Length: 124
Image (tube, rainbow, N blue to C red; front, side):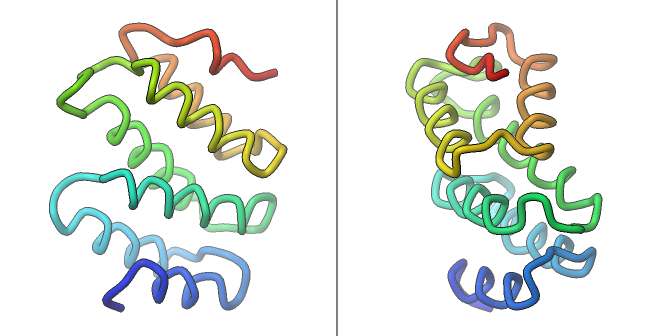
């Protein structure tokens, strides 16, 4: 699997993400040691496609860990969600019109770890 699109097609073939696929994702996404914007976008696309399905619990763990790392371990605003990141995250969460369980877990994790939590991310 050389590209994210090939990986996405393979993973979504059955509509759910199982443990082996999470392990495969982790290996590919962290090959360079960090999550970049393209990979973060890819994770949101996957999450939107499998939202509400019977995914392996490790999917939520990977998603939360990867997106938190992408937002809080960047060089521009380490430990913080800056305005640009907050706008991006808000758009990603609202992209499919719902706040699912995995996205809620992400927001809870960010709220706990970020030095400040932008009001724009306080979804009900």
